[in-house]
Every structure is written in structure tokens, then in C-alpha cells.
Length: 609
Figure 1 (tube, rainbow, N blue to C red):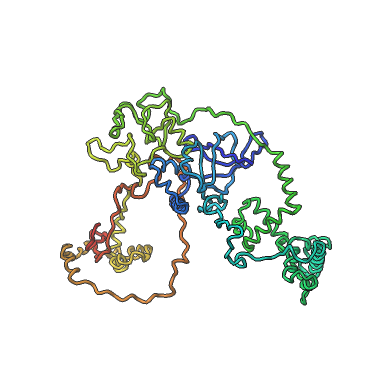
Figure 2 (cartoon, rainbow, N blue to C red; figure 1 turned 30 degrees about the vertical axis):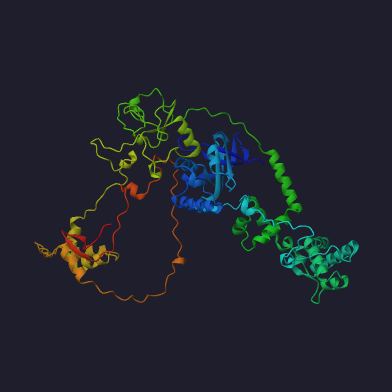
């Protein structure tokens, strides 16, 4: 059957969803719903999983020995990321009226050039499977095995009569049947009948088989399966095609040999589990084993599958599915969607109210040809002329896209040009100079200038500051400052403070002045008197293996809204750190002092690199 990959729209401003239609159903009120398989874009998964996907892509490129990605320009690399999808096992139902067109999704293989996806419209690829519940990425087991590494190495053809094969054929193959034996076809058939009879008798003697096949004809049918015939022919070959010795080998001293295949070994409940798993996962036998039949080996599951396909139950299920498919909808007519988009900017609106007011001055990069005062350019391709404009991003940023880039954004979930975070120059709407001619720290985007965290400070009350003085022997501020994780019983301190408050002196004693030496003298003293190294103390208790610790799963940030101009930003970009992190070397000494009722830390020496 032909798979239908389509676009669904669930938001007027977000990119279109990509889904694969499994079936079409008609609801009770006459509407049509599509049962679909979900595909996810890179913008829909967490940054941790994106790093794993990039690592997998690098490994795949090295395995394929293909330097195609390295030769692509930065713009095409950026656009190629928009063509990558992640398959999921998640199913959902969506109204058929939300379909916005068809697309093509294929499993990536080494014979296809990545650049070919950029040359085709509405073409996507995937190689990993995303689990939205477990937040994991796995390689798709349904790999198309074509390419050089899957081809057989054919040896050179030997010359007829002139060249001999010097290989030891006994090491390369094992002979299990000789068609030119002294036995006739009739004798072989007679021996196979004897083998089936012995197999039927062996099942009658076996308690578990008599429970599964209570009737004689069921036992005879099980004894006539291929496993019995294979055993009979192996026995005949092992005894040199001597009928007398072969018949004696069928019934050794301990009793008749019972040969059972996977069809007999499996119970009825295991068979039902297998059919349920096959309905959910298809022929993904690894997932069937992990989630439904972990006590079965992969070989056993695959062998049972091909035997199960020869049973009457499989034929009945196939007929039922064909009958259900006949009753279901096979196609539905979706008219062209021509309603106006709410993000569409009306040409009748005054320029002062549009993105990039006509009276504003927006300097562009050198050579861009943009004249200040003509409005904001497209955030993707930097053009300043388009037959239609669309608002894009948060309203406070006043960004817009041209018609071509808006279509690209809806289909592929990104901008045509890389942003500043991808190593490209800033767009024409992002000035790098302040009104006073000074370079701005957050010049990459107007959103950088927005305060991301609310500032606050802690101020103690007067009773708290008084309790520090009255209950100093209980609080022990110097000791607690050196042990910041010890709990403090604030209720006991408040009770003790209430008892001591009537007897407190009217004028508290002044703080003792402390003569503090300058930092340079402390550093010189520490350099002249280094602290001797202490031996490592013996470990307390059992050791903890870091390998046994379960890593904390980071919750992915699903960027379901607009990714803004710069997409996902890191911590240092939120806080205005454009350069590298400042790294502190280990401190040589920490001294603690109390000043104005506040505990402060003083670093005796530090170095900034």
C-alpha cells in the first residue's frame, strides 16, 4: 500500500505538522478523522537529544566514508537540518479538514545524496526513532540494506580443466544430504512415514503434548510438521542411508525421540501476546521481544512468526483485515485552503503600526542596499520588498517574513538563512550600534535587551538582627559560616531571644575592631609558608560506584511556540556573556569575617584566566 505523508496545521503561526496517515475513519456526526503516525522535527526535541542526533549523523557519515556534508556550504547545511525528521510510535487522530498538502518522507540510506533532498520540494528524511514518553532516540531497525557493505565478495572464476580449487571445502560447507544414495524415492517416503508415526507415539507419551494436542489427529498433524521430516532425513544421512540402523536410531533405548518446533513450544497465552505485539509494532521483532516476550529469544520469535504465517489463524486474520479495509474510507477530498492567515499583515495598516515603522532608522549591514526609514526587512532572506508580509515571532519584537520565507517557515520549521548563533552575520534589522554610537552588548537580537529574570534582594528584619546579637552563643555564626549546610533551629532561637530580650543591656557592646592586613601581604605570606600536604584519609564505609548511579534525565524543552530569531539560547546568552566563561583557579585561602551584622566571604587570592 502507498503511504500518505501529509501536512497538518494545528496553529496559524507555528510550522505545519508532518504525519503519516494510517487510516481514515468517519465519525458519528459525519466528519472524517485521520489516524496518523507522528513525526517530530529537530525543534520539537531537547538540546540533549539533538546532540545525540548530530553524533549519530557524524558516525553515519564516517561509516559511509562520505564527505558530502563537509563540502556543503553553511547555508545548505542549515537548510538540510530542516529536512531531518524523527519517527515515533505515537498515534493520534486529527480532523481531515486540517490537512494542508502532501509531502514525502523516506528512510535515509547511504545510496542517496543528502543534497537531493534540498533539490526536491516537500522532501524529508529520517534515521532515528523518538520516544516522546521516555525522551529517547534510537536507530531505526528497518534499515534498507543496500550499498557496498551489503554486497557479497565474489571470488575469481576458475578456468575449466586448467585450474584447481585449492580451498578445503570441508571447512567451508557441511554436507547434510546425498541425493545420489542407494535408496529409492519410495524407500525414503516409507522412512518418513515411519518417522511421523514415531513422532505421533512420542507425543502420546509426553504429558505436556497430550494436554496441548488432546486428540489423535492433532498429534498426528503436529508430528507431520517440517521439524519431524528434518530430523528423519538427518538421521538417515547420519546412518549412511542404512534403513535398519536409521529406524533403530529413531527409537533409542530411552524411548522415541520427540521433535517439537516453535509452533508447539509456545503456549496459547504467548501466542496471543505475540499477535498483540505484532499489531502494535509490526515486524519490529526487537521491540516485540523487549516489551511483550522478554523470556523468548529473538531467533525463537522470528521462527515462530514465519510458522504462524502458515496457520489458519493468520489466514482468518488476513481476511478480517481485508474486510475491514473494504468498509473503511480509502480517500477523501480536501478542498484548497484559502482562508486568510491571522499573521498576514494588511496593506491598509499605516506604516507606523507595521513592523519597522517608516519613521524609524534601521541601519543595515554594509552592502545590503537597505535604506534607513523604509521599514524592517525580512528576518530570513533580508529582502525589503514582497507582495505579502507576515508577522513572525513575539509581538514585542515586531519581526516579519516575506511570502516566500513564510511558506518555507510553515513547511520546514526554520528560516532560510542561519541566525547569528549559527555563525552568520546579524540581519539588517539588528543594529550593532547604540544611539550614542557605542557598540551594544546584545546586538544580535532585540530580544537580548529584554530582562530575563526579575531582580530581588533579601533584607532581614530588626528582630532577626537583634537575635543574632542576643543569641550569639546559640547561633555560633562563625561556626555556621564554615558549615553552611547544617540546619538551624529558628524556633528555638526565637524562643530564647524572647526570654533574653527583657534583660538585654540598653546599649549593646560595640564590635571588636579587627586589624586586617592587605591582600598583597597575605599572598606573600602564603607563598613563603605553603601548607604541607595531608595524607588521604581512609574511606568511610563502602565505596560508591559511579557506574551504578542512575543519571538524572533532563526534561526536554519542547519549543512548540515560535523559536524567535535566535532559536534556543544558552545560559550565557540569556545573561549577556558573549565571551568565554571565566574560570577560577582553586583558592589558596578563605577567611571569614563579620561586618555590619552580615557574613561575608573574602577570597585571599584568586586568578582570572
